[in-house]
Length: 162
Image (cartoon, rainbow, N blue to C red; front, side, top):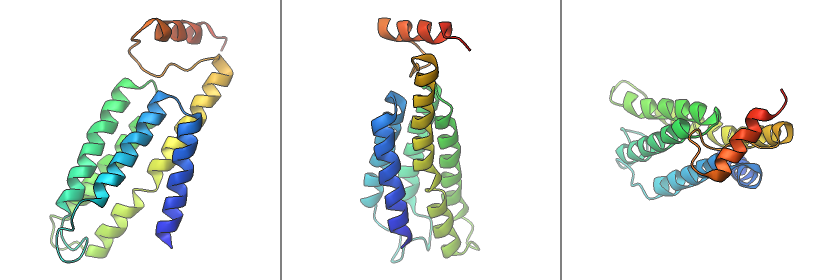
């Protein structure tokens, strides 16, 4: 049952972020989908999932953390910082399994629980992007303007009334 709730949330939020979001939101969806696809190809660490540290999932989640952190560094948005913080919690959850006293069900539940905020943050980012466009007329995607279009957008954003 929970997998269907998560998949419904995931699809709804990702479609919304692709439809209404800017370049950072679309890149965030691509990172998330790539991590989900990569996770599905990772073999279980033992005969049962989450009875020991899932090093394959740790590698995928660590790669996602690096990608989201880079997105947070270059995007003119706050939501990627929150997404990076959630990913830090996911990676730490894997590392906690180094303690043999940790129960496998708590590892599995904590790993799954931290997955729920990710698509919600993407959708919230897309919603805020649309709010800024409605208010200011534009919303610069990147913190380092790269070309004439970005510079024009940045000037319009800075000249908009408060």
